[in-house]
Length: 300
Image (cartoon, rainbow, N blue to C red; front, side, top):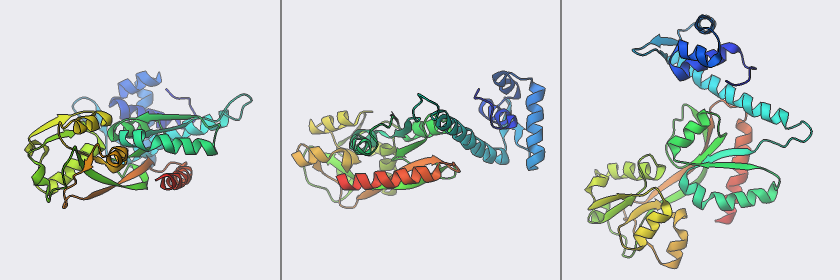
């Protein structure tokens, strides 16, 4: 349970949202179940809407409840950030670290140089960077573990504010050969892909579907969670793959891998910075994005 500063009814409401149970919420908050029920009733009276309905196992939020859940979770996470900032003013304390996440392509091929340039301007700043797929990072933002994330995959724009960080080419790579006319000309190849849930995989499958093609139509499919492992397999002649050009610039320049993007399959996709919708830190995230975008453009 977090320290009390937000209205206690908000804590009760969020506990019910997270547990789906008045009883479990009361246990977590160390209060009685009637107290939790009263808190929810007071919120329902204030907003003039039913916030929970019964289901087979407990309760679930109504549409009005879901709107409040999003707003209250943002408020709760912002309160923790604000508290950390205020405490950093005490003697002997330091500013809270910059906590954010990156999807794997960004973490491996954009973040290292970007953070090096960032630290040239802010040498005393502490940084905590989490790496994961888009779904994992969205969950970390919701839980207040990270403040924002640089991602490549789709996200729920009703829950998160966002801004474009960069426009990136998404290409096919092989050991050798020329770019074919169509994606179907590659179906006799083994396809080496990231795991399900990765932004890279979702982007590729979405564009395949536009041509009525599925990954199962290829000669075979190999799933690897490591981008370096995928590149090594392609270089060894195991098969072909599709990934962001930024992840394979070195190999293309050395000639160990070649661009085999079909002529009718050119893809460009955005890397985006996302954060909780309605956060009081909105301007801070946008200012940081502007700075990082400039640094990234200068190093390309």
